[in-house]
Each structure stands twice: as C-alpha cells, then as structure tokens.
Amino acid sequence: MIVLGIESTAHTFGIAVIDDKRILSNERVTYSTTTGGMIPYKVVEHHIKNVDTVLLKALQKANVKLSNVDLIVYSESPGIGHMLRVGAMVARSLAIQLNKPLVGVNHCIAHLEIGRMLTGTKDPVMLYASGANTQVIAYQGQKYRVFGETLDIGVGNFLDSFGRALGLGFPAGPKIEALAKKGNNLIDLPYIVKGMDVGFGGLLTNLKTKIKTGKHTTEDLCFSVQETIFAMLVEVSERAIAHTDKAELLLGGGVACNKRLQEMCRIMCKERGAKLFVPANEFLIDNAAMIAWQGLLEYNTSKKSMKIEKASIKPYLRTDDITVNWR
Ligand code: AMP
Ligand code: MG
Image (tube, rainbow, N blue to C red; front, side):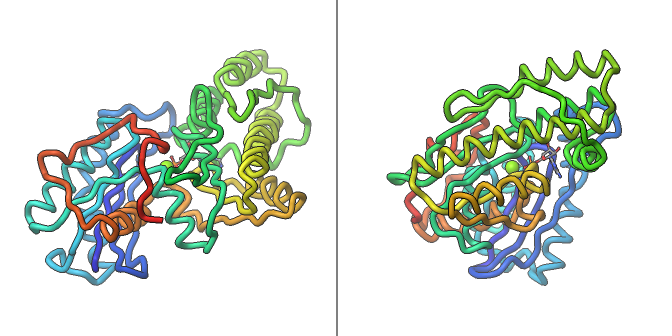
C-alpha cells in the first residue's frame, strides 16, 4: 500500500510517501525568521505557497505517481488552527481528486509510533519535547497516558521566546545549543518541577529580567538555561519510568535534537538500567513520514475512511483522548 502523509500543525509543512515497510520520501519546508516569532497568517501564506513544490518533490523522490497513492493521511490534531487547516484542505482535495480513503491522526502519537517503528523500542516512556508540546507519555490500558507535562508553555516555545529576547530569531533552539557550548558559569535559575509536571513561564520572566541587567554573558545564560530545563525534563522522565516500571526511554520532538539533552537522558538511563532510543533528527522534528505511518497503522486496524465533510481539524485534542486500538 502506498501512503501519502501531510504534516501541517505549526511551522512545518511536509509531505511524505511510504509503503508498508519503508519511508520512500519525507519532504518539508519550515517557516523561519531572523527576528521575531511566527505569526500564524504569515505561516499559512508560507505553507500554501509551498504545497505544489513539496508534493512534487515527495512524489519524485519516492518515484511514485499520484495515481498510485492508496491512502491519504493528515495531521488532524493538535496544533495551530490556521496551519492545521492548510494540511486538512490539501488532504481533502487529494482524497476527492484520487477517490482514495482519508485518515486524520494525532501528531503527538505519531511522534511516538514512528519512534517505535524506527528504533525498535517496544514499550517506552516517551519524552516528547517539541515547540508547543512537552509531555511524558506511556502506554497503559489502550491509551497513551500523559504522566507529566508542561503546566504552561512548551519547552521549545520557551527556548524560542528566550531566544527572541536575546534577538536570535526563530527557531532559537539550535542557536541556543551552539551558544551554550561556549558558556561555563552555571547561573542559579528557577527550577520548576511540580510532581510529574514542569513549568517554564516563571523561568522566562526571570530570564527576561536577567537579560536586561546585562550582568551575564549570552553564552552563560544559554548554558545555564539548558542545564536547568533539561534537568527538569530528565527528572520527570525518570519518575515516569520508575512509576510505570518500564525500561525504555524514547525521545521525540524538535528539542530532542539537542545533544546535551540526549546526553543527560543517556546518563539517567544508564544509571537506572534503562535503554535510550533516539530517532534521527529528521524524525524528531515535525515530519510527514510519521503522519503517514500513523495513518497506515490506524487504517490497517479499522479499514475506515473519514467522510470528506467530517475531515476537519481538532486543534486541542489531547494525546490521552485517543483510544489506541492498533496495538
Ligand atoms: P517541533 O515542534 O517538534 O518541530 O520542534 C521545534 C522546536 O524545537 C523549536 O522550538 C526549536 O527551537 C526546537 N529545537 C530544534 N532544534 C533544537 C536544538 N538543537 N536544541 C533545542 N531546541 C531545538
Ligand atoms: Mg511535533
């Protein structure tokens, strides 16, 4: 079966083609700025402008004709409504044009399932650290349960906002990682862990004040921010592993590309005899291959297509709202 997946929850518009076993192509364009953050209507313009090119590239790389596609999948939830609508619109148009089944999937769960497919982890706790989402997720009783999560903003959004205050542009995560390598003085920062949850809002306010005082170097601020927030994420991940009695940690989300976060997770896993699984960066960041794979899993189980008029978007649907019937 040839599956075409469409990702469009936020800054990335992607199209991938997969078959039952392999990823044949995984194309994307990502909105970025040199200063300031992402303004939804501008991101929509960017995505719409790129639909044709990304689609063509994905088909060409996969060496597949549009008429050979058997199933269309799109990211239905969660995400920013403006951008989700672009993906849903493209998916509905293709499903009508090709007269093929259509499936909408949850983006967070797709991150977890592509991780299982690519790395071979069977029953992991996943630390999903992305722009808008920060969750510690594990399977229990037919659902992907959220054992811990951010109480305010996602860790990536926090890094991007902190980066914006430093004038770094969007996305700031990779620039902060590079600057952090040159810092070595650990500045005392608020450490916000409440039970299994984390928070970043207070830390962001604290940092904005610190930046204004001009007392610290940008490098030291970036270094200290990474050490502090990654320790928070590792702490709640470890607690979830202990609580669920699982022995595997899987990383997902763009922030998980960060080598220091990976290193800290590796140390924690080693110390407690667990195993760490890290997919390639291409599948940690938002990508359409995971959307296609998730759709295939669900379609193989249900054999059901969405009705075109019901194929809309669910910007606020949570990871734990979905019944997992494919495992
Ligand atoms: P996603 O929403 O999963 O595509 O992830 C995007 C987020 O990941 C943005 O907030 C980026 O700033 C962040 N990000 C990407 N690469 C890195 C990195 N190397 N270190 C930290 N954050 C990163
Ligand atoms: Mg994501």
